Amino acid sequence: NAGVMQNPRHLVRRRGQEARLRCSPMKGHSHVYWYRQLPEEGLKFMVYLQKENIIDESGMPKERFSAEFPKEGPSILRIQQVVRGDSAAYFCASSPPLDRGGYGYTFGSGTRLTVV
Amino acid sequence: QQQVKQSPQSLIVQKGGISIINCAYENTAFDYFPWYQQFPGKGPALLIAIRPDVSEKKEGRFTISFNKSAKQFSLHIMDSQPGDSATYFCAASRGSNFNKFYFGSGTKLNVKP
Image (cartoon, rainbow over all chains, first blue to last red; front, side, top):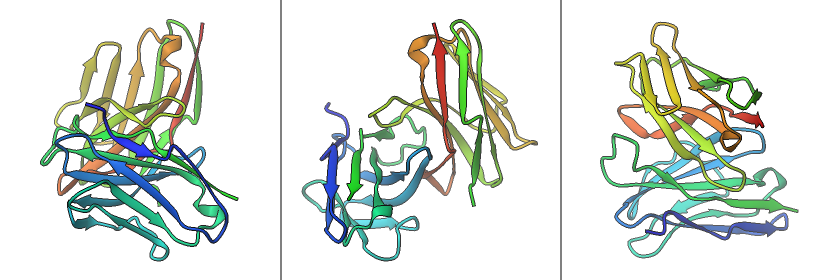
């Protein structure tokens, strides 16, 4: 089991470009979560998705950010017209359904986005 | 508004010593409190977790102490080792939305040989 796979590991974008971050959950996991970590800070929840559904997007900025988890393929976090303040590490986690014990909740190694 | 407050920001401990990291929360609806360990360049990994029906949970050298009335919980690392050097995050979630975690700001632990 390869774990939660995120790519790319590092992404550099110029201001105004688009950033696409991908997350492939662990095998058997149908729930995906995205978090953002600013330097020297904890992780902040962004969005929770199940296949083809956004369950909770209360942590997503209202503009420029979107997320999807299609029936086939990885989950995508998309940031349009990036600004310097979007520079952060973006982590994806996945879990199996009804994982109330929490031990199935697994993070990927993250994508470090740098906006220049 | 930060829902989970963590201290200290950084901690230096000698090998063999006890590392103690503290967290406090406001929302009494929280009912699951995990601790995560993160090494540079890696994602957080679950270390140990507790529910508020117990006051202490121990797994090997790691112990969570939980004080429900004070809304505080702490991580104790006994016999700290250089390999424990990492950033530690406390977190909390609530039953109705148990997979949405609120994280503390992290504690960078350095265990000196």
